[in-house]
Structure formats: C-alpha cells, structure tokens
Length: 288
Image (tube, rainbow, N blue to C red; front, side, top):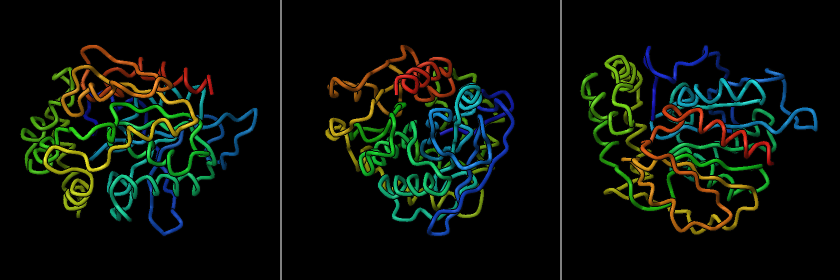
C-alpha cells in the first residue's frame, strides 16, 4: 500500500497515465514508460521483453514511481492499478487473488504483451505468482517483493485500521508500520490516502477484497508449495523488519528461488530500498 505525498519518494517523475479496456469491458489505468511508448509491444531482439509492475492491497501504480522511472531508462516498464484500486474499475470480477491474476493476464492481452518480467509487491506479489502459475508462458521472470501467499500469517489488523480511519492523523498512524523510516509517514500522506479512500465505493470495494483474501490474521491462499512448478527465474526480496508480512516466510523455499533479504527494512521496499530493488530487477531481466 502506498500513495504519495509531496515529500514522499513515490512522487518521482510526472504521472501521465493511459487506460486499457479488458475484454469484459473493465477499465485498467496504467502508466507506460520507456522506448516506443504508445505502440503495441511486440518483443523482438531489438525490443526487449517489458517489465510489468503490480502494487499491493489499497495501493496504486505510484507505489513503483521510484522504480519505474529509473528502470525505464533502459526498459519498457508498465505499472498498473489493479481492479478496485486507483483509477481502475471498481469491479473486482471473480475477486480474490485468482480474480486479480486473471485481470492482470487480461490486461497483458489488452496492451499487446505476450510475455513480461512480472514484478509484484505484497498482494501484488501473490497476484503475479498466481498469474505465472495459471499461464506459465506469460512470465519471463518473477520478482516477488514482500509477497503475499507464501504463508498464512499476515497483519490483517493493518487493513482494519486503514479502512476504519477517517482523518489524516489516524491514517498516518495506520500507515506507520509499513515503513522503516517513520519520517516518510507525513500528514500530507495521510491527507492524500484519506482523499483516495473517500472516493465513491472505494472502502466498500477494499473491504470486499480483504474478505476474499484475508481473515483473522491469515491469508486464504498459500502458494509456496507451487513455486517449484515455475520454469521462469524467480527471486524474492524481503525486509527483515517487515511488520505486515513476516520475512520468515522466505525460509524453506525451493533452491531455485533466489532470496534477497534487506536488513532493517520494512514492508515498503519499492520506496525505501528502491536502489537495491532496481538493481535486482535489472539483474533478473538481464539474465532472462
């Protein structure tokens, strides 16, 4: 989860977005950066496979601003708003992680991407993992950043506090556990998140999604035992001090999964450890 405030790292770069229409009519907002903007993406030896970035619960495409902007210097990079988030349709479709994964695959179809390096944070990590398991040929690689669905345990109380907050101070308090640096949780951030949550139907949609994905401190869908099915390269990035999804869920995974721990970091690695995240994304893209 993250929306950006005036002094927040997720404000990097200007925001010029587009809208893709899925086959079922739902609108998905996204931002595309890099070479050949606006043209269908047809990977060739000259046009490399694009990177597609998927945010977490209650987040939006700006979660990736500090990653998308620098990565786009060398790659085509797309960041999207999942259904129920940001500027996308409030229609969750089938809902839950499987439904969001199907929406992601439909988005790839809509924008002409056959195969992509998939990057997902938190709930978005579960979404890209499910998408890669459902359609293995679509993932050139997977970068899972503090991902969901690798264990049952989660601080679902964060979601309750976030959706119950109705003033900037309460929202800032709800957001604070996400960050290693409390200075990033500013009053301005609280005001912006409050504005985003105050949109028509937003809280109701997020409560519905939360009920589909979480209950009583547990995640409904656990996919860790299916990681070995993946032929594409997989890497896992996690902050050792993550208070939302515990980093111990990175233990005991198949040897082919490259695990990168970030000492002292929390849940918001794409923002607080952007340079390290970008370096590892660059490496897996170069290898694939």
